[in-house]
Length: 412
Picture 1: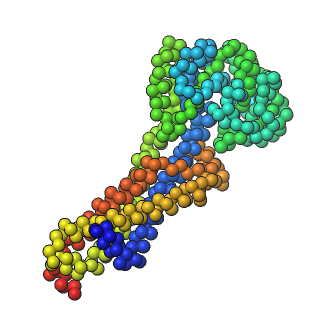
Picture 2: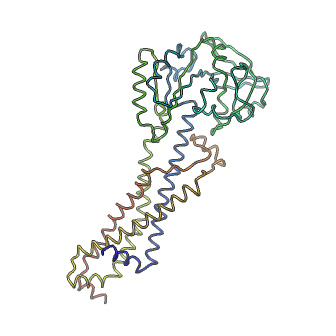
Picture 3: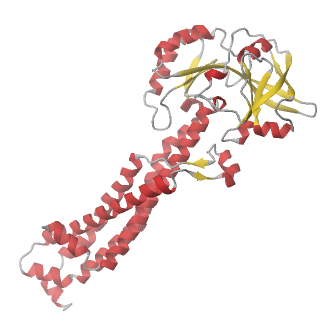
């Protein structure tokens, strides 16, 4: 009975109810949609970072990050792979690489690059180089004199697919070694800066060029899980790997350890969202209090009459609180439906930020942001509105319960 009466009381003044519902829909929708866009932006940053030759787990010499030279290499990777493979979960992919600083030279200029030796078939689904090439074709084991460079680097040096270039690096004796390669294809990534840095050749070719036998500088593991919010157990897996390879002198790190800035941002993100939800609600809460106070004072004679016939003030408070609860629930329902429509239909294909490419690249963001709706964000936004809405609604409800018959008679 209280629900029916409360629902009818809400629509005694449809204009006022629709105004506060509109404010609630705008407020909750802004919370949910903006949190989905922010979550999509973060997921894009994490994906770009992981696919940018980082992987979910990387095993390497502990001094390599400080001194990225070929002397900081894994000399017997096959033995190391045999040790770690039984510990990895099903679906894990492994890639061996050599990554060294070098110089790419043409007849007109020389450019500093990072030379990466890869096994192309092992990179599929692990890094950006495993995707289809932009121009030309991927290098294959039968053509040892080919390489792949970024489209931005190709344009920078003014070359074209099919031209020859020279790569120069240092071997384990600190001597400069060089070899000519033919540009077989180009790749594209979300970040143009990446295209200007990495040059890819076959791993056996680079091993021969540097004279390191079967040595590699890193072993990268890509898991089926591991994105932001989906990396449960990653720290435990890394700990188990480190225990297994402790005597080898190498170290395993997860992507959060290799990318501390992004990891810290992820840790603070939920706090940022909660603060944003509260700020939006504060603006919306004033509207709820103002609207309910207007409704309470307009019904002063009604409340006075109810008190005169013996209704307790607690019953009046409960009735007003039920009205506020129905208002909050109905507003949340409409706002959630509108939010899902915007996220899945309007913004479902992503928001193209190509016009702001330089800014997005600086932060490691994708050029296209696809909203990612999180149940945590959805529940938090609605929970904040429901809980705080009931709290701010206590004032007009208590005010209604304090009206006396004598006070109501003064407003006849």
